[in-house]
Amino acid sequence: MTATHSSGHSDLRAVAVTLLAEWRAELAVVLREKFAGRLRDDRQHLCIDMGADEIVLARVNAGGEQVIARAPRAACHDTIAATPQARTALNGTRNVVLRFPRSSVLHLDLELPAASGATLRQAAAFELERLCPIRPDQLYFDCASVRSGRVARVGLRAVMRAEVDKAVALCRASGLGVGSIRFEGDPRAADPRVFPIDRNAFLRLWWLRYGAFALGVAAIVLLAALLTGIYLRGAAEDDQLMTQLVSMDEQVAAVHRMQRDVRDLRTQIEFPAAQKRAPLLLDVLAQVTDALPDGTWLTELQIKGGKAHISGLSKSPSDLIGAIGRRPLFSNAQFGAPLEGAQNGTERFDLSFDVKPVGRP
Image (cartoon, rainbow, N blue to C red; front, side, top):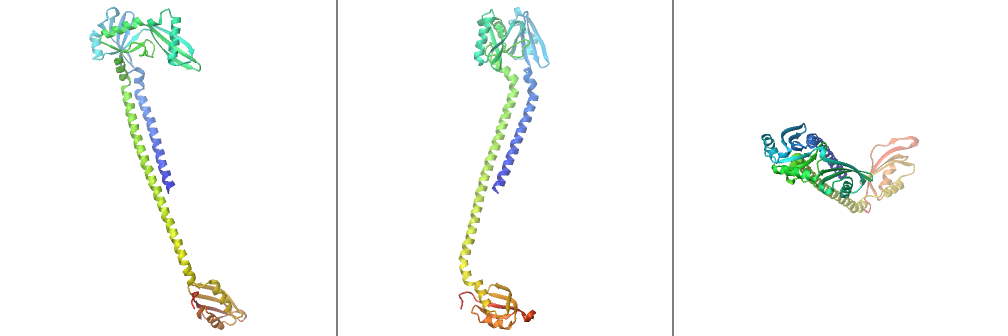
């Protein structure tokens, strides 16, 4: 009984776990389909291209770029954000992405011994100082590494610090916060820990890109926690029920053992009395055998309660009644059926008599 219940609850838990895993997998596919494009293209954002001669304000999304305003770089302290087109595009949004042309970025590909990120950055700074005529303190640079065994391939990017600081100052003079710095033709954004990124603008752009996804993940986590809590609560209730069932099984088994012990005790108590009341089979058989006259054969002997029944063949069946009646253990002997002739001068008899209980005179 216990094993059956335990197996049933285990099967239910296995089914619940399987369904939850399949549901998570399907939900992950839906989320990837819904948010994959948004994560690739940073959703829609405003970008300021710092060209050599002019500054361009453009709206960037998955479909491409749409130029909103242009301004000469020599006179753009507030021109880029003051045009009607720019004011319409900004619409109160003061967070932009600053992008530099490919010609202003120095790219170096290095192979260094595999190490931690901080160690690789220090090594890249030494290599930059060795390979570039410009001092590292005049540059903003970051690096990304890919490890392959004991070697790390490091991609290093460097931009003149004065050029970046001037572009950031121009944006701030126009009331714009630089949330990200990018480079033409490079999908990887500049390291916000190194480049002069406005923290609030960075967080707002990050939320614009990942906010919906983060809320979706949070909702999934909360739902998963809720389902897990429900499952654990159900499992705890199942365990409690199983404990009660096991306890009931033990109680039923104890009752059965008690009933068996009572029956055994009753049998032990009643056996001596039954032995005193009932005649012994050997005594009955011995006295019947002694009482049979010569030429008599028994074919059947039955004892039921205080009554005995014998049948067989005898050459003098009439003497049986007297012989049986003279025995102290027997009384009231009589034929139960008429005598029937048989072979060799014998007759078939059927005789019944009472058997006195042992110990009764």
